[in-house]
Image (cartoon, rainbow, N blue to C red; front, top):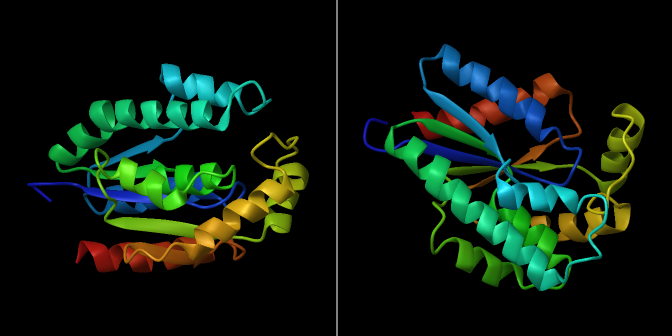
Length: 200
């Protein structure tokens, strides 16, 4: 830990509870003496703000332009936050990382494997990817009925189904698949078991 921190990425379709689980894990690790940094993508930087403006309508950019924004946002995120935090020996918990880009942009027709390869040229590979799995129908239910939100262009059930299928095809050794349909406490316990294995 003194030489290099640990990077844990939370991935999955919308509505899987990533933000909730990151907060719970951050509390768990902090209580055990780890220095934790939590972050998210898209970031709040200039490229991230442009991406967030797409949530209302993705139609004024081409798929290539949209992917370029995600890549630029990540380069800035890695340079300004992730690499410095890892160099300081911190545990970095990120709400989305490059597998989300591969899955969501893959659903638009890009090659997910190529996106991953391009990202891994500059972005640290996570020590652990917590992939929260949930059916697209349950995701939409949580977004609309539990949160009371309207679906944005990334959250339509047909989009989520295509994204979930790409996530399901990833076979990296650092992925821990977690059933996000369970209660938040049960999901947290599943995640802690995986993280404790990593930190031993």
